Image 1 (cartoon, rainbow, N blue to C red):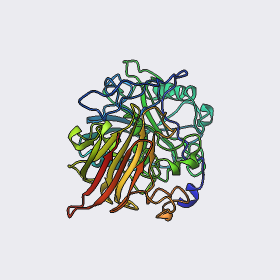
Image 2: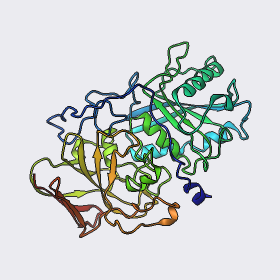
Image 3: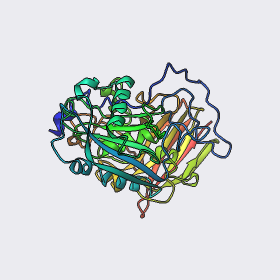
Image 4: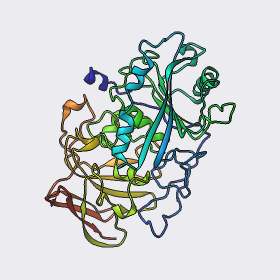
Length: 407
């Protein structure tokens, strides 16, 4: 069943984001601050830009939820007159909790404490599921109608105040099975409805069906609540295998490598600046990288080559949220802050482009499973003047790399 599910190319065209009019992206975002030259700034007008915002956009009343400290989620469960829940609310809730808080605790090195407050009963929506027009990539109008009906059904008995985000776990028999179409979605940045006491439903993740990625589908969707983009190809899903592959839950959330990239962890405040090697001047330097999956040590080397682009090097190991990783070594990827979510803001460099690995992990999308560079391997780019070589591994399991910048 897993293989059959993964053969559906349309499977993970998961809509994410908020409504809005046409966007005009700035071709020249502001430069990073002098003290953080590798913290590329977000490009204005780009959906969930991979850059750092000029001003904090995270927190109460902001576009995204806070990604450090205590994050409070209200978790509701809904069913419909034409799709009544076949199982208990507690059973559905148990598909995601405590797995999601545990995933975030490991990924954030304890810097994000995820607290879910569940309402452990099914909230019956006033209209049948078929009335909302929910389908793959459904729009803002359908979402607004559902959220307003949700408040009518639940507002008088539930206090929505004081939460950073809202999870809505939909009865899995509403809509098509996940191996036919995935409907899970996150809306952030605009409020679909407001409660009588002023709480805004402006950061909402909805989970449909029984997804083959299990609890990680909610980790992925909540990643959007924190401002992370989709790394898969939203308009040409088969091309995903040439983008970020299975190396980040924001790409393929069923992937063998279930953690987040170091770039994302830095953006979310889970890594300190001192854990990032930043090379902006010409020359050659040697760095030691500790795997992303374990606390402490230097986690990445970043080499920016424009205001919107950078090369990132990090070490990956089969530990923690990556315990099922296919290959280990030094992962290299390019980040672009001027590319919309779902259009390829991250591209992994493949150290072994003629081969794939661990093909049993899915029916496709395996070509980047063996992307990490190991001892003696490296890459050079004449256009940017950047190159690197992996020197080897230390007795402690860290990786030594030599990095050169020629201009």
